[in-house]
Structures are given as structure tokens and as C-alpha cells.
Image (cartoon, rainbow over all chains, first blue to last red; front, side, top):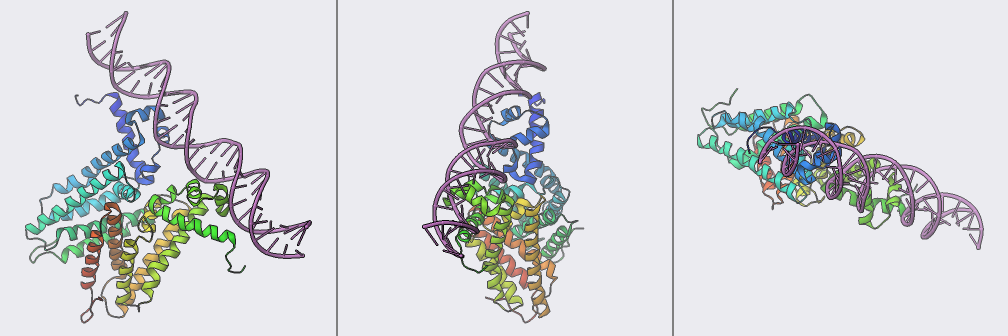
Length: 206
Length: 206
DNA sequence: AAACTATACGAACGGTCGTATTATTAGTTT
DNA sequence: AAACTAATAATACGACCGTTCGTATAGTTT
């Protein structure tokens, strides 16, 4: 009932902290209970008892990753006033979140989105929900900038394009294990794309 | 020595035809030898003998997928003269290749790229090579259009952006199982992006 | 102190994985 | 027809999978 950390909660947290890291590299399928238990130095059955099924562990992992994502990308950007500044902040924080390897395998949701895109079931649905949530958030941010007269663009269209750059940069960075060429390309793409729709008299941040 | 189809080759082809389909949905890790044999109605050991190891099966699957990709996207686009027309053709054929579900799980290489991006080994390397190959091809196509005076853009930058739209559309289509909203967004993004760098007097195809 | 609950444990289950060994079939060559 | 080769099958192995079960311990409540 109260918010104290009982013994079981600490274990659960430790498990999920490790789970999101593993899943960002090897996927939610590569996440095995035995491996997780070994790495954490606890018993397989004890770990299992916290979740009851592998699917429930996967869903809990998605929820944990969502919290981290919100903390690292959404919350910081929402400290900026609605408008072009927030759109810009979302871009900067997203690329930074990927580049800083908040998850060792890059963006957790990009990884698992591709893993479960062509499947059905509760895990797919949970991922899909987060995806809608994020794209809706991006569209809203763009729309506010349009409403403030800073941008002239179709919110859905611009949100799609910006998100495209984020994901392409993330994949390039992980796949080539490079220093950040992909991020530079994405930054340039974002900048020129925003410049092309910015209204007269409005200047880009930074 | 000769090119006749001996019995073993037919089996090998049948296996790989199924492998690429499975891998596009469940990944190269989800590709299991037992499942493959059951679905094809042959013995697990007989199938295994064709490849000698799972990794070799995975590598052969990548090569098979590359051939299909070349046939479906690259070759048709290369029937168009170098220049803006070919850049446009690459875009059209890529989106069509994804939309037609040449692989049931969408673009094979996008799937496995994300699956193996954060790993090491021969499979990762093979995927990386195909990725470089494709991005180089895109850059070359853009560069030719620039050299012909049809486009004014940094080839690497424009290739990155176009490819971003392709992949975002592919993911959206698979993830939401939608009718094609993602492809429409991608087409619009490609069109306006090309229009923004097309030189005076040049018009976009179609 | 006794009763109860939450948490963790070890052992085992049936199943599937990739792989190796051995046998059997089919096709070709002589 | 016999001999040889290439292709497929049968069987078995150890490792790991998710899951279940019975039990031991620690913490809390009465």
C-alpha cells in the first residue's frame, strides 16, 4: 500500500533494469529468464515468480523502458515552451538519448518495434501503443508550433519525417558502430527540413 | 560443374526460398532448422547437411535475400537512365517492393539489420556489407543526377534522407498493418524533398 | 512465542534447439 | 547388373528453454 521499498520490489527493479538493457541488444525474445537470473546472481525460479510468465516479464520490461524513455526524451523537451523550440528540443534530446546509449543497444523501442512488427499478441500491442503515443506526441508538438505561427507544415507529415531521421541515425550508429556520422546527417536533415517550413521572421534555435 | 539442377540444388533453393520469408517475419534467430524442415516436409538432418551449420544457413539466407532485393528494386531502377529519373525509380520501386510484400515481413534487410545491429560476428558483417552496398548505390544514383545538373544536393545527405523515408514507411506499414498511410507519407516526403533541390527547368517524373 | 505472508531457492519437467553419427535411398557410371 | 556417389533420412546427444513444484528462510502480525 505505501511506497516503501520492500525486499521484493528491489529485486523486481534490478531485474527490469537489466532486462531493458539486454532487450535493447538482443530483443525481447533474446531475453531469457535463465540468462537474466545468472547475470543477476539469483535463482531462475525466484526471478520467474516475480512475473509469472515470460510474456508478463516482457510487458513489464516495455513499461520500464517507457518510463526511462519518458525521463530521457519527453520530460526534458517539455521543459521548453510549446512551439518550434519544443520541436527542436525533442529532436536534440532524441538524438542525444540514442547517442548516449541510455540503452546499450540504442533506442529500445526501435529494436523491439522491428522485432514484433510482423507478429501478433500482447507484446506487439503494447509496443504499438507506445508507438502511437510517441507519434501523437510528436504531431502535437509540431501542431503547436504551427498554431503559434512558427511553422507552416502538415503536423503528421513533418512528424513522420523528423522521426524518420531519428531512427535512421540510430540504426546507422549501432550498425556501423561509428563515431556519429549518422547523427550529423540527421541533424543536418532536421535543420534544413525545419528551415524549409519556418515562417518569415522565425529563426531556428541554437 | 554444369548449371543443371541436380536434386540437391532444388532442395537448397526450396529451403532458402522459405528461409527468407521466415526470417523477414521472425528474424534470422527465429529461423530454426527443425521448424524449417517440418514446414517443408523434409528431415531436419537432411536439411542441415546442406549447410553444415546454422550460421552458414543464415549467411546463405542473406545471399538469397540479396538476390531477390536486387531483382525487385535495383535492376528495375537501373533500366532507367542515370539521373533524377533513376533516383525517382529507386524510390518508387523500393516502396513498391515493401508494399507488395516481396517478403511477408516487409523489407528483409531492415528486419535483420535491426536484429544484428548491436552484435558481432559473420552474420552482422554480412548484413553490414549489404547495407554499405545499398547506401553506396543510392549515393551514386544521386551523384549522377547532380552531375547531370538535375539536382543540387550533397549525395550522401540526400541518400540518407531518402532511405530514412523508405524505412519509416516500411516499419509503419508492418507495425500498424495499415493500408498504406506510411507509404503516402513517404511518397510526399520524397516528392517535396526532391522538389526542394531540383534545379531550375527540371521537373519531377510522373 | 505462534501464526502467517512474502520472497527466494533447488530440482525437475517436457520440449526444442543446433549438431554429430550412422544408415538408407536414389542416380549415375562403368 | 555392379559399383560408386550424392542426397536424404533416422536416431541420438547435450544444452538450454519456460514452467511447475515443494521447501526453506526472513519479516510481519497477532
